[in-house]
Image (cartoon, rainbow, N blue to C red; front, side, top):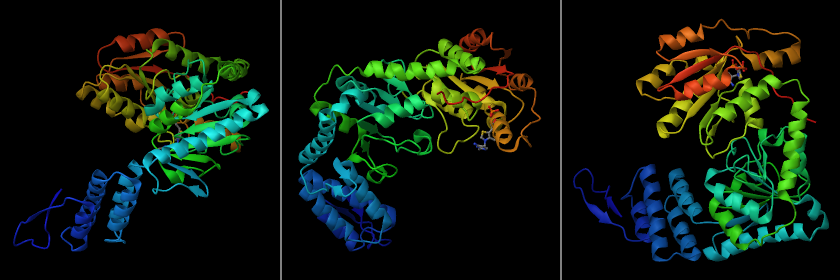
Amino acid sequence: MEIIDQTRLPHARVLISLASGSDAAHAIRVMQVRGAPLIGATAAYGLALALRADPSDASLAAAYALLIATRPTAVNLRWALDRVRAATWLTVYMKHFYVGPHFEFSSIVDRAVRAARRAFEEGWRDTTAQQRGRVLFGVAEAIRARRAELAERIDAPVATTYMGKGAIPEDHPLSVGSAPDDPAFQELLADADIVLCVGTELGAETTAQYALQFRGRLVQIDADAPRIGATYPALGLVGDAAATLRALLERVPARKGENGARRAREVRERIDRGLEAQPRDLERGLLSTIRSVLPRDAVHAWDMTILGYWAAAHFAALAPRRFLYPLGSGTLGYAWPAALGAKAALPHTPTLAVVGDGGFMYGAVEMLTARQHRLDAKLLVIDDGGYGILREYQRDAYQGTHAVDLLQPDFLALCTACGIPNRLTSPDRLAADLAWALETPGPAAIVLRETLAAAAPTP
Ligand SMILES: Cc1ncc(C[n+]2csc(CCOP(=O)(O)OP(=O)(O)O)c2C)c(N)n1
């Protein structure tokens, strides 16, 4: 690593070579390196140099201590050192049990895995485990293959969060889908002896606003230690999800005969039966039409709109990183621009945005972006003349509505004005019109004038 000696500036430009962690520490201490971001970067490289010379955890700890002491109040310094250190760790964290950097890397992996394995084995010894079994729960595309492999190896049903949809194809026999508000889904998680949570922070949406109570043991994998146990007590494995699952996969013995696929199917079927008993054929029909027309690996972006809420719980995502949804901030207007971004990234992948009329108006102007940049994403606008979900909330809370009916433009004329081919569709013609949009070169829009109702949890 070479730095410019700032003590000599502006009169002379002198380069100094740093060959070790202690060289970096010296340069920071004597102010040859100044400015918070540069101090952070130099320290990070210093730690990397120390590890290149000696990759043991003892060397990591010594170099970290040396570098952090050079400027203990510098936020960037600590941040940069922590980032490098975190990248080298796979540690076990369990509320009051934390295996720090004082162990060789391999021994840390072994400890982490032994702890997780103990949890599995305890579950297996427990006779009730034979009935309840294990469930994998969570997210992260990077670990998709590993997760399906691990799930198959231990015969565990896989439940996904909304943001994890597609991490395992939702038509995989072990998939139970992503319906956290439905009791069948909740009971599977609540009754499992072990729930292995991968990359999920177990937040409000995922846990029915924290109403979900786990009777079994949680093992939580997360790259960010403070996330573990933040909402539910858990045995934690701090580390990259793919690496941690790989380590588990190598060490966890295969188990057969607990019938994970049967348990997953029972959950799916119970939810399906519940939905069939509801007067919601329109919404379910729309979802199944869209699913039947979209290719498996198509991108589907859903706005904060009633059919989007349906999709989060009940639309089968069949490929990873294809279900786009603004969970978290619930950002209305996200889906159409997100679909255009996806299309720019994956020009050969069919892409559809599903938006309500209210949310569409937040980004309708992006129709011109689509044309200008030749982004041939498709658009389905569901026009109910206003903020439909707010009508429902207001009716439930106040038995009336206020300021939710919107004066909207003629959407077909608006599309035409922007040079976007468009069609007015109906539930019966949706399949044909979607197919038309997918075949039409360039962006295309379909407008459906319908009033939908939100899904209600099934019994
Ligand atoms: C940026 C932003 N503004 C406002 C909201 C609040 N909000 C959530 S859903 C919604 C109504 C959306 O209406 P529409 O897009 O027509 O879909 P519908 O509910 O009719 O299906 C509103 C205003 C939000 N989530 N984000």
